[in-house]
Length: 246
Length: 253
Ligand SMILES: Nc1ncnc2c1ncn2[C@@H]1O[C@H](COP(=O)(O)OP(=O)(O)OP(=O)(O)O)[C@@H](O)[C@H]1O
Ligand SMILES: [Mg+2]
Image (cartoon, rainbow over all chains, first blue to last red; front, side):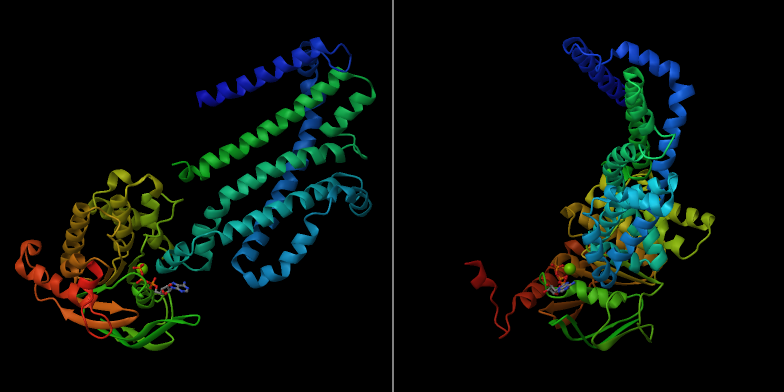
């Protein structure tokens, strides 16, 4: 635990050091001073930044949770039943590579300008990764565990609960880590359309008002958002996947 | 207890077991010995109800086996312990899926842990255990279910000689007390001679012979002349080729 704290501080220190270096070497208003930005960040955090941040946090967690529910279900289904996979796999392979972000206008037309269209955009980006990871995870389970489970008298439901889910869980967490990076980037983009709240909006709005200190404060907030989401996943891993460490 | 009649089995097209006939009485033990790939594991899967015969039948307690039996304990070739469950939870799992009450699970698992001398390992995960410890957990996982039939697939082959003998003694001790029937698959001649009332020699999916082991259960069996005689006999039987000639010497040159 102590070591982890140290690692986080070291990362923060390094980033600030590089930032200072850039600030001193590049003589332009576009690189604000870290001290000035920190001040703006602290002063505005609870009044201005936090509401935007919470809005973005809500959109991401809603999208991730919904993707998990449907993505894991579909992944388990296709992983356990090759005959279903035969029908779904081509569909998944065709839809997965489509740049969904290009469909934001379509989603906004169909699902309104508000939260729903943004959340759906995130879902269609995140869910494929989860489906494919879960399916491949199920396929990768050694058949000896299924024999072992059946020999203990486990029925279908028991097998999902005690064998399949725990076996694919670490893979799902990895998929989540990967998709969270993408989600934040996509959300940043999506929040520039027809919203008044969201950290993406806050950053771009500050930028268009030439308030660089606020823009950087927003960027710091995004970084923190990602940091806490990743930490959350780490906690889940510590709690449920400690069997992997040894 | 176990009656096997004209059993045939194939994976897809590859026929693995040919016309297997076996008879094991209640409280008896059967050791199945044969070279790698001869179909030992497959036979055990059929006895456990994990695979279904193409022809013939397995009867247990005069009932045709149609699937998994509640009172058959199975120890698979590499144990099949769930890596994501602690030792305690691995032992508890069979009881849990049978709907046992939490109190009952606790008493039964704790007493099994104690008997196998692995109480202090109960919060560890399988990956943190030595081979011998994993072995004990696998035995415990079957024993908590109070089986009347225990099916074991090379349970001790990954252990060093001394630990292996210790485990063999342990199984024999528990069997003495609980009086279950057991089938042990092995490729180790000494193990078959030590743990089998009856010893079935299998080759290429066929039973070559079934020997009666008159010394079974004797004290200090490992030091006795008869034990070595039996092993010699088994070795000869295993190295006979199809024409009935011994090819042991030829192979050694
Ligand atoms: N799931 C399977 N699908 C197809 N063929 C299989 C399968 N399992 C085993 N076989 C084949 O059946 C034959 C018997 O295998 P089995 O596992 O029963 O041998 P074994 O006597 O237990 O060997 P070992 O001592 O190495 O464990 C082998 O030729 C093997 O290739
Ligand atoms: Mg085998």
